[in-house]
Image (cartoon, rainbow over all chains, first blue to last red; front, side):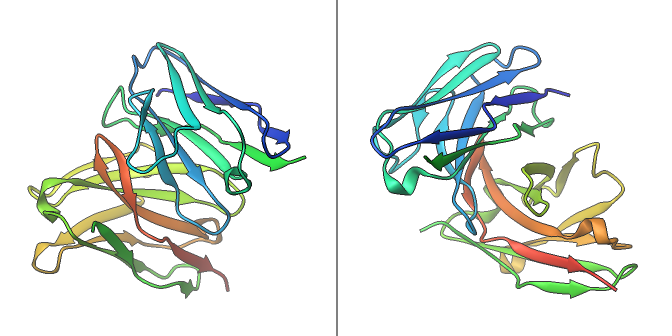
Length: 108
Length: 116
């Protein structure tokens, strides 16, 4: 089973600041990683797929990078609606899919 | 517009069974896998399994195999997740999601509360 470890668990930042979220895989998953955003009381939403591709309608302030075991989601300048929980997910060993534990981005 | 609409919240007693539905629209339902994802209160996302409406193919997470059953009724573009022998620890929000390589569209979630 591929284990995805996200860090930090919580990120306290102010609007306008840059957010850098990390996701580390227990073994190489190539670039087969996605990032999802979950706002309180809502279903997750696909942000980034294939490590670095923005999903339809996702603002350019969201970017993803990485390959192998280390992945990063960057939000260049936080908007009020970006304060949420973010999950990474791998599909390298389909159908054995897995999610990371999540990073909460909260208002400082 | 692609949509997945799930059945409403449920309150069940321990030992009872439950079937959650997920109706797809706006796309060819039999062309994409449907995933089921659990989110326990205050916790993260857990992938439970995949079901392909086109050929009834199933893939279960080892953590959930034997505990849940997935099915479909293609005449109404609806996938189902059955939970049997419910326990308090099954209290969670259950999501369905369409998989097009990744989970690109999600249902709104179904809250299941198991309490005596």
